[in-house]
Length: 429
RNA sequence: GUGGACGUAGCUCAGCUGGUAGAGUCCCGGGUUGUGAUCCCGGUUGUCGUGGGUUCGAGUCCCAUCGUCCACCCCA
Image (cartoon, rainbow, N blue to C red; front, side):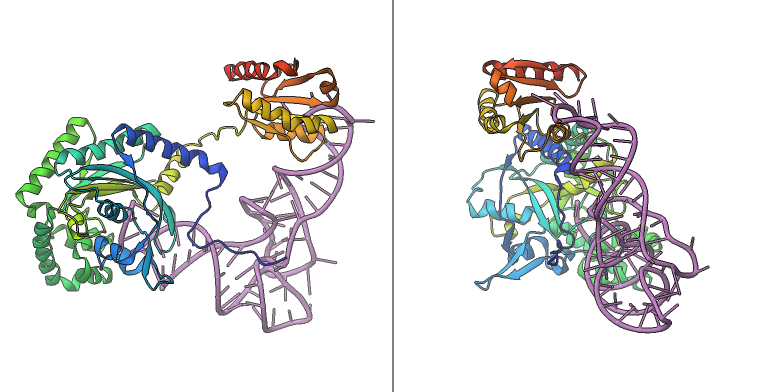
């Protein structure tokens, strides 16, 4: 035997048995987004490396060490997208969609980050990302959060809670950043190795440290929320008030800072304690400076992304989702003439009953085998066509999910008989 | 990139201080030559992740390597 080719680390197959739960999430999300007036957009998985450098930030971990970057045959540096927002913003600009217009969009697909895989974290993973550009007020922030909350409700997701924070404008964030760096430099000897490294690149992230020995130092640090500019503070308060009015519980987490550079003002994260160390299920925030940074007219923007693998894992934990049967009717044949006629008959049945699903037994097999396949297919009904039925111009109908005896129907009325039998079988379950 | 645990049949796993590779499930055949799921009988599961070493002898001990999982970093 030749050696088998191994799958790529961190890139998983989603098997047919798992698809029911994926489709449940994707369908709910699609319906809900459409119901809120968001339109789908599809953008390439590959972009110029420069796009992510500029959008996400040179010294973020994502850009510095997690991107799948390669030089193509034309000598250009390209990158497999590590997140969705940058590509969608690029598409908006490339297609001249702005010009004072506002857009509510969503985009789904695979993302790629070169990290060590662990529970709920893979090198190819899938997100649904939702973006709104041209909306500057707090109302859109609230709508996006309410949309998430509704989706969790619809999916029956329980163990998630909302945390929010405000980073302020780019300018107030810079001022705060300077204060923080000053404070941290003064206590440099107390910082652990990770935090010392962050101090140079992305000091806000020091606040995120999980090291308990850093806790006291962090608690005593200047608080971001207290250094907000007046407008951002008002914006944030409006968001909080509206969430309260909508009855959506949340916690203000002053240490919530997000890893990508483009965020400003409102940031939020839906987190869970049910997925090991990976607690974020869905997160996002405002990126009011991003479009200008990418060369467009200054335009406010906000968006979030949910991680499908993590949602799938959560839903799988909270109870199995029954996979629907693949077919309604399984057709068993016996004898050379019946076998040949089967193909023709099933095509006619598909014409007559386009909403019913038929599987014709293929590749022969004795009755026992064929009935076993019929049973495994999940079909409610078996249709039996043997040479002696064919001679009499009939087919037999056998319900597979209850102990009712089988009956016969003339071939001329078979479609109607199947429809009736399926309706009866469905009514019983 | 760093740390820990683990790699035995398609799947879930057992295998003692080294002594010729096992169970359940799945699949296939039969009991029922025209009737599934249940039941009974029978059958195939395999370079023990890979390479090397120690030994009369290695699934078992040692080394290396690859892979998986979990965690760190970071994030969805």
